[in-house]
Length: 126
Image (cartoon, rainbow, N blue to C red):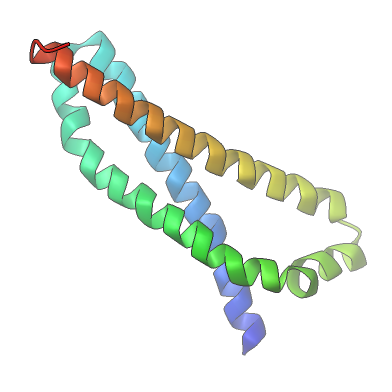
């Protein structure tokens, strides 16, 4: 039973990483559109709260789900990778996942700052 729970946790941990990155990418695309077309700012403003909720939940799951993943890493990820001879693939996977989390978080923060600036400019405040 533990194996099933750990494997499910690891899967959802990976999905949470994808959700964080995809939410941030969508926000970034909307931000670029808002910079080019002022009417697109409304779409960014409407979408930001919902996409932020997705990103926050994903970030919490990444942190919380990372705890059991770390505890059981050797048994359920490292040892099978050694047996199958795919340790380099496992290392690349985790490096890419870490890069995705960092990139997603950075885009999310950048978009928030840019949204606040665009709203201030639109409203005539600086």
